Image (cartoon, rainbow, N blue to C red; front, side, top):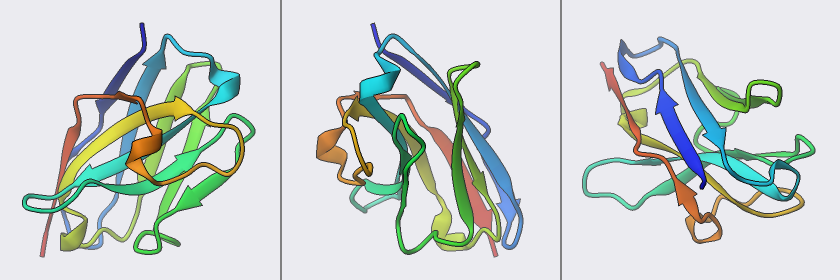
Length: 124
């Protein structure tokens, strides 16, 4: 059974930083990609960053240069380091996993498994 548990959300002022974590278990790591999505009130869920088994990454244009995705295979944990946060980054952030080999997609339809989400609030 696939299980994804996010943590690390919180409230921060604009310009600040947060690191999200996602503890993952129950899937074949070598054939899956894993990523971060977010959903703000009244908006569609959007892909933020993703990483495949070989470490290839994808980023949304809105977060390039500010966010970094990484994973610790020994701990089966995914991270999202978020720097220079802006009020428009405020959203519920989800961890998701899906079967994929290659440059990971940011299309939520490619992801089968989802965590419960962790809230990030950035104040101006």
